[in-house]
Length: 263
Image (cartoon, rainbow, N blue to C red; front, side):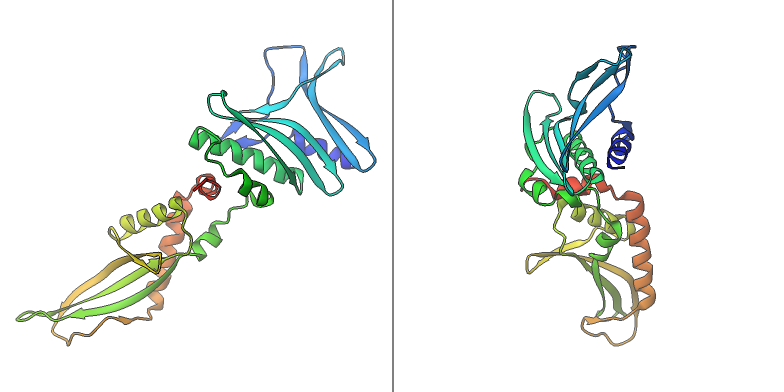
């Protein structure tokens, strides 16, 4: 059963950047498929990659696609020990990376993530490999819902006196988040600019606040100082706009690449 499960995982196609990633050598019509040879010793499975020809001769060869080559993969008890070689986009520079994945799907998530990172940044030199090793088993699990929950906002109402004219009143919405990734902050500012207007950015205790003025009106009423406003209908409208806009514009791959970039 364990052998069948591993074969099933490794023979599925891996989609990265909308391309088929598993290597298939079409230049040799004698090649049936890339073959994974399994050898078991005790509770360990050792995988050897290569090609199986029509005469059933097996030739060992690395398992490679795009910018990653799998040099070693072994199942030890409940985890998968691996060593890979990571190339830059020009296939000139390279580095080795080793780790332990909790499962084959997590291992494949790491390979897909690294390919996305190289595609975006051209090289592995900005990839924080130490952080990647620490958080190996959360790669590929970005939750848009959790990201939306990290966006906070408060609504205020303000008034100002104008001599000889009606006083002016407006609502102000202040957005902020403890998420300090550049990609995320730029995305939030783009949302505000497209949905309302370019925000006024204010740094408050090292947190960037984005101030938006909405619903301006003039009236003869008495002005008042800025105060917190509870408006459930407006809150619901803003949350709906956020969800719809981020669902359309959020790129999970780019967000995740920003998580593991060297600062």
